[in-house]
Image 1 (spheres, rainbow, N blue to C red):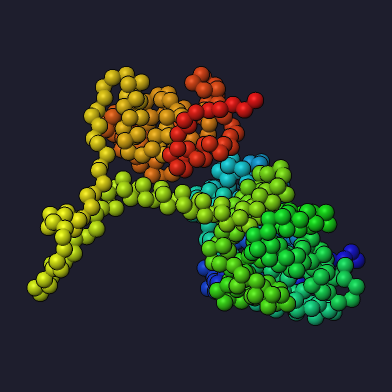
Image 2 (cartoon, helix red, strand yellow):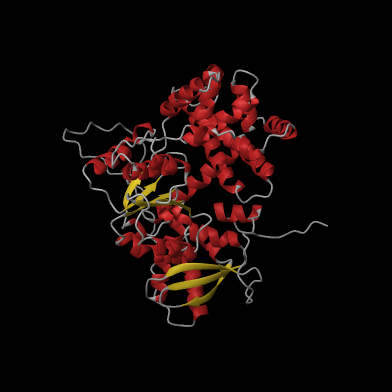
Length: 545
């Protein structure tokens, strides 16, 4: 007989064996006992949490030769046929490979016929979210009013892709990720039953990598059993996963803590030469710095290797909280950028260089503080200091001084409030005249906004928006994505055009011509960054021969 993988051999055969889903199994068992079954169910949740297995168990419970029961025998002919996938009354449709409307029509044609064994017909549609829209439309009427002997079970890992009209016709059950404790206990039980020897730290690593999926955990254990020579160790699992050892990650973390950029690059070069994948290395670094972040606050993460807990704790003390937050943010941004990057190693190196250079973070912090201060001044929140309360007791006799009394009074006056932006009258001229008025008004409010806005030109004005063209995407993104700029532009537009208009930007790399919008975002130059961040102006351009 051909070898049967662990996850198939240890698939749940009754409701009590389903791991970590009591809220689903107990509800279904109660519905079977009280004969309150729905005509359609939707099982949603992460992969490897028991959705399809539960659907098969439900089919067994309704078709068992010993009668409808919440505890099917699993030994009769019908139960064995359902378990083997050969039952004529239980049809499993893989929506990933049967997405067309014709596949659903085939189901509709078979529905009116009675069951072969006199029980219930159960249609299990796996990965239901991959059905096409016409297929979903063809399924709607069957889901709403199927014959009494038919039950639908839709299983999906992406329930947000299932139309709301389909979801509303089903009883929905959410399957949860399995806890680490549940998976650990299950793996130890399977290993003992299969006569495997596995270290506790190896099982802990399998559980961490499985991320709540019993199927992934058993598949990895099965693979490790075939590779290991005798006992399954943590090093065996690391070799299978292609992950770097914790010592290497902590060496990189030490270089980042010391702001040793050259040391970081040398370590990355060494790892790449040894064959480590930059993407996998980035994922591990995120987990390692999360552990350092928790260790810095005295929290021990049970999901990481306890062998290196002491070194991790001592290393976390060398970081400040702000530095760890900066590193985690840099690595998280790199992970998002790496999905579309053709040079993952470069993306990783740039992220680590930013993590090792606190000057970059401090510069960004200064720019953010300047913008907050400018915003506060604009709205008048940075008003004069509050007037002190009037004393109820007599004031002490002032000391003798040669300064005139008028100077004392003047010095004690509170600082005047910042001058508000001047009101702008509505302009009824041409679009160009109105645009000049907009630039002038923005210049009186904010130099930063004005510096970016004057790089563009007005394309069109209608009843809802002002469309402005830009040659570089940097200026358009700066004005569109920062709320303080959007607020200033909206306010000035309302004064100049006499109605509330929104700001829209369009990229035209050809300048003021009719060139199409750019599909690529150009990188800002150093001059662009200085002009946007500090409101600087170019005084003179000098070409170097």
